[in-house]
Amino acid sequence: MPTMGNLHAGHLSLIERAREDADRVVYSIFVNPMQFGPDEDLDGYPRTLESDEAALGKHGGVDLLFLPDLRTIYPYGTDSAVSVSLPPLGNDLCGASRPGHFDGVASVVLRLMNIVMPHTLVLGDKDYQQRVLLQRMLEDLHVPAAVVSAEIYREPDGLAMSSRNGYLTAEEREVAPGLHAELGSVAQALRDGACDYAALESVAMANLAERGFRSDYVSVRRAHDLAPPDVFEAGDERIVLAAAWLGKARLIDNIRV
Ligand code: PAF
Image (cartoon, rainbow, N blue to C red):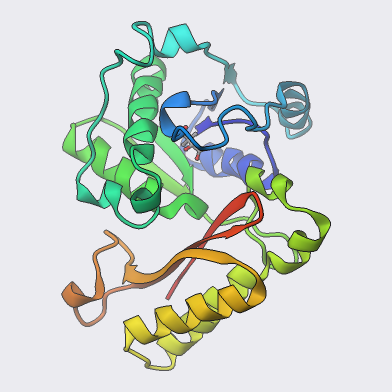
């Protein structure tokens, strides 16, 4: 499974999920410059290899810890690298405010998969759009591997675990579970039969602002492909997704309905 390190319990839970399907588990840690925009946190991204190795060891270890360097992943350098170009969903939701991000993710994950040649790719559902796009990439490019997803791992107060939670100040950390709470309200309204999606989204955005977030989006989509409501059909599983800034941290979360 691919990670960028700074491992938390959410990352570690992926190992158990992997062991359900696989005899051997390969774990990679590589902070991928191609998925960071010019104004993003590549330089400050937490690199904590020593504690990551200790955490993996305590957790029973993995069969192979793959720690490639930049030249191994990008032999021609990042400026001249062959890059994967994803379909339009790559520029929607998180992709709308992070141009090139998902193409960068796809470009590294395909390289990692070509090196490791796993049967299964384990991905966490916090990065739900990433999972949908990578699944689409594997299918569309005939890569013989299946994606398995692992549930979002949450702190007791509901905050989805993320390496970027470390950017939160103590005060922001108190506010942060509000993102999950707002998604929970939208999910409940959907379960109760509300179907004015635009209204639900704008109320949630206003509530997030009130709580101190700078929200990027709140969006109700079809769960399996993230298509917008105008193509929903009866019985479709839905998902409500959000991204919002709190200080230096851009937090994302989602709930399926
Ligand atoms: O989710 C992440 O940490 C990254 O986007 C991933 C999948 C490891 C690719 O670099």
